[in-house]
Length: 248
Ligand SMILES: [Zn+2]
Image (cartoon, protein in one colour):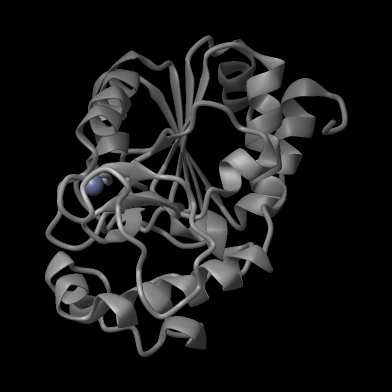
């Protein structure tokens, strides 16, 4: 892929750079998404049963086991070159932050630090009554464990339908959008709000906006540069073009 000089210069000179990732980034690792009907793993996904607090309270054992299976599936998958480029970028220059809508923890696995997770992390748990954070539990039984602090049931620490995004994470993400010089939006369908408002906020605040996605999205008209294709292919090329050195 050919990149124009302004794009390369902006990336090379940025002191505050945000990588913002959506489902498409993880799909390239084989992680099924809620919406992707070509991927049969989640085709029978019933959001009311498996992704709401009321669904969990009605059938905690069933929901817990459903997530245990998803967790086992994730352990067979791994980060792809897009995750690795973003982690390397953070080592290369200061002021790089990853904000993600994904719940798989692949950015951290690839080496990214201080990742802002807007939709939680499926590998962590919290209790259903008070949100007490609990370490990853390898319990694959058909019943969720209990919180050690309050005794209520543990659930995956992800944002379910009808729930607000984690307030601190979202506030921090908004600040970064206002402050950054370059914002790179990767694999986002731009359909899930409020997270999808972040790239628009960044553009309005004067950031140079780069979008990497196989398909067109509502962000196309706002972006300064649209790169159509897979992030796992484009980001390594972009690394090479910007830094003129192989990916470590
Ligand atoms: Zn608790």
